Image (cartoon, rainbow, N blue to C red; front, side, top):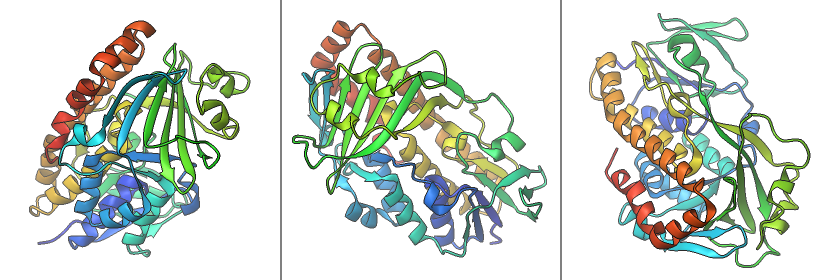
Length: 367
């Protein structure tokens, strides 16, 4: 079978995972990334739910990820002062799907890069345009012709802009800050804990092991710019370990959160995966999982035969319903966190575990 010469634009999680899966299946693959290899991690951590770990095993890197990651056994929901609202074992949410883990983005990217032939990936290489013919023009003026171009280049995808058009990503009305802190002097920081304040404020900690904890904070906002002054003052009324962690957050990475509204991810000779296709609210922590599933499903559908157009149609059909479910659950959870504080807290105390189970139940099935 003639296998399409494939260019993957973007060497993030979805792009590298797809490269590994396609190379294992004998496809000729090139990967280009506009950033330097050391500039991709942005000091972030990742909570990888069980369906993400299952997919990493399917790609062939799961065992190495497990070695580097920290198990997450429990999820806890507290109010902003640290009073418990709900607590449950993640195994009760995911059943036999697999473990949930936490890892730095840098470590996950290193595992994926190591699994891919180093000659395949070119960093500091930016794509300017992609023609419908499959001709790619790079920022340095060079061109190349490909049978399949994969946009794995994030929410501001050059591939999407060139070939797909459609609406730009929609601002979700949320701003976030994230950083990794040293927790060696802070007791009782374990697993995954979300602390919920008023006005949509959340402060999440995820234990990364080796004395490190991933911290993620967000607020509601009507504008995409960071508020004036020190952002940490927005969480000054939070209790427990939050004040001590915020001392280390002066250089936190800031972002305005957006969601993709484009639901068409394929066209002849091109496909979008990961955030290029479907950027999400982080509420379900499914961004990385859906990106990894995209990679494995696309590799499987391309392997079915020489008709690339049919394979891309099969990919779209397999992914659309699952992604739509995650989008809908994110919206429900984001609405719930903005309920009046007494009602939100009452709901989580009474039904927190049941709600989490319902959110994730369809994701137990293979993608």
